[in-house]
Image (tube, rainbow over all chains, first blue to last red; front, side, top):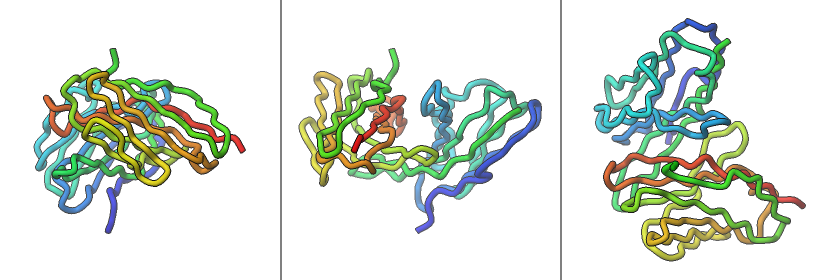
Length: 115
Length: 112
């Protein structure tokens, strides 16, 4: 089975440019998460969706960040305008909670560098 | 206070010994607890999950949960060099179902 698919894997962009990260969750999973990982702050939850609806976006750092999930198989995380402090690894993850709990599965990450 | 706290390490353990990793959490009504392993440059992968007080064993790994003390740990027996990685503790809240928060991770190094 295909896992969580993210693109691009690596992106280098200039400060002020728009960045769009994409994610395809595991088929059948109804939760989708966006995390950001840095050395200083660890793995931070930015936003998560249930059945395409945003449930909690309290982790989104500021208005420059936005996320959408137009359908069950696609989500985007957009940064506009980007800043050097946005440089991080952005992970998308998905899950299907059941009686055994809520195990989330991560994509390989999008490595973003803003110069 | 952070929601999930871990000692950042590095924790150095000789090969063949037991590695003990610890995690505390602040939400008293948290329901589910997870340990993930992350190799450098890779994404986190699930090792174990635990939901009830006590011990849960899976091969060389044992997860221990004490809800009264808000404490969860991971023991790795017969540590191997391939166990060298960062171990992330994750907690799923009750009040915010399915919201999974991670600790900052503990770096584990197994020395031959």
